Image 1 (tube, rainbow, N blue to C red):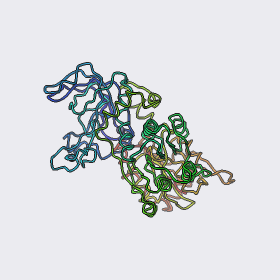
Image 2 (tube, rainbow, N blue to C red):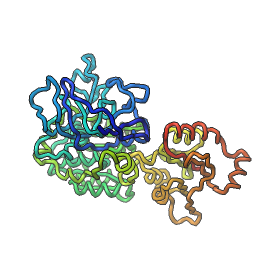
Image 3 (cartoon, helix red, strand yellow):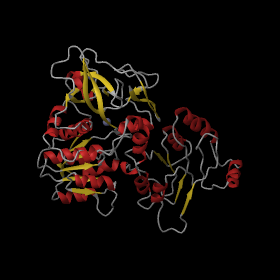
Image 4 (cartoon, rainbow, N blue to C red):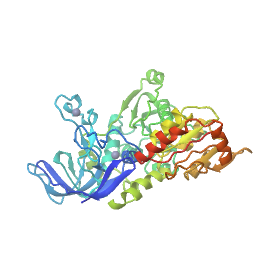
Length: 498
Ligand SMILES: [Zn+2]
Ligand SMILES: [Zn+2]
């Protein structure tokens, strides 16, 4: 059968593998649809921890890479193993709850039914066990839920991320009539909005989201008020207070993993309100504990889900959740998953949200690159003030640079990989010294598009600078940068200097 197999960052191959058969206690499912999730995209760009590596197996599955990707999927039962209880029948449509935990009696979380917070928690399609981006899978029957007859297989593939949002609603103890603030209208934020609206038809629900296309979706999916956090004339916390008669919302949910969003959330929650963090953070955020103390705000986290599938499926079947169909961006065939799925999603700028960075000096060097080792090198060795990933869904070069330059924009933007739009948006306006230049390849090592860019792209000037010893550490660019890049099949190198 065909399967999309993950070999490491930048390396997904659709290839033929053996078809699995249902062992005792398992059912075999012919997969219908599988959603591509932010964590899949992240894994395409960088090694992330829940995946095994080529040499280190996952502690629960015992598998090393390659693994078959996909954890948000639906399908039809085509085989039933020995000892599976009678509720399953051939031809039945099902969804899979892909969470796998250690289930050891000595594990506090697993022995208390909290499998989502077991230290070993992992997923089908991430830690191993097959995945949804293939034709068939054999899974333990206790992870299989029957899809109600009036729910399509397409919607079935959305049940997994919907369950993430459902769990967040529960963690926030949201009730009808309460008010809520959702920070970030990516897939989880929009699913959460849909669910909160279903359970709170009269509730005030405010959404804060920098991307216009997502704000439009939020308006369509029942937000009372949709705000752009980058609009300096209408700060989110002030607008939330206004919308709640000066009181603040009952619950604020952060689905961004961005410092400014947490700050806004804590300022927007009413006394004795609740702040729910759904986001996974790359860096440790800071919390204004005095806001938490003086208003006795409950701060909590929401990780994945546990045991919500039956009630969620019932809510979907009863038609309570509206507009799920238009949250499907496109449908593609398995053999096109890399180009039309992963690469297309990564390149869609509107799918990105915002990463704020701390204040930095006005004149600063910034590097953006997909490749983690190169970004590390840029800050540790080449004195980039900031180095960040333009493709990470929680980061945006535009917002980050505007923030870093106090809303003014940087003096000069250099583009060497056709990132023209963000570069133009970052340049400050109305300045006679403003220059916008495409970078030129000034040093080509013969390894594709790797290059070093300086503010002066004149070769003579560059060679003079090299001769004068002005450019430090070029050897490291080759050794740690370019060679590492080739070995990891990672992305381009660019260095900006002023
Ligand atoms: Zn996911
Ligand atoms: Zn456990």
